[in-house]
Length: 279
Image 1 (cartoon, rainbow, N blue to C red):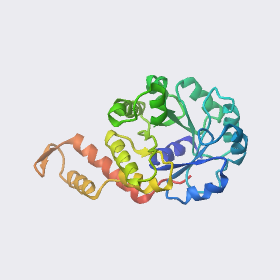
Image 2: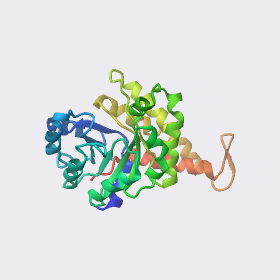
Image 3: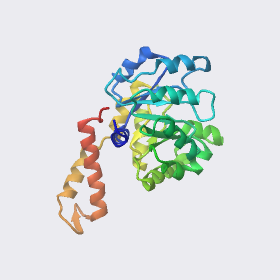
Image 4: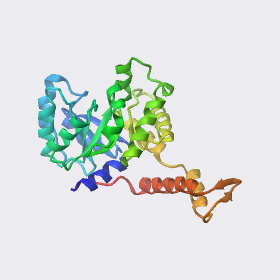
């Protein structure tokens, strides 16, 4: 697998599901959940005394879906061993939490042999302050927003209006670096999947194209939020059939920027129909 194909795979992911890496009995279940990628978590989901066992349980042969491993942050006592363990596996990507320093990301990329895509998890004030540098770091294929940790770092409320400017910074940084649009953080409410859908729809409206999932019940709703609705697809087809130049469609002006949006919707619809690229 070459880096370009891994980048394409990572770019297509919409609803990846976390599973604790020290629970290999759950790996196959996670792959069968409807998620379009599985994130084996060595970090927050694994207690300190279970890190070695989690690392030993890592695998990528239990599914044809993309497998991502979230390693422990740079500077922790587990980080280097995590990188060494993941290097031996044909994973689609490695997620680095507490991403704050482009040099640390470059070191992870080098430690993995330079051919594994990185997902930089932005979850602190320092990470946001350097997010454009991080997005431009070689090896980084996508940004993800750790919104809960970010709010803990700043001591602010986990509210959409509070996090709006931060989410937009991730979208802008991704666009400037010419990498895939970012992945939004988790919805911690597990009892009502509609909340995950609503959060994902909000993220999509801002330019995100995926959302981290922590429970199988969230997956279908997240996918539905990122899939263009039938009326959007119909509108896009009508726009693209309207010809060139500035024209009127249903009383609204259509020119090239509007057609760009229409092409994006059609492309997203095509991804939804064909499914996520496999490893």
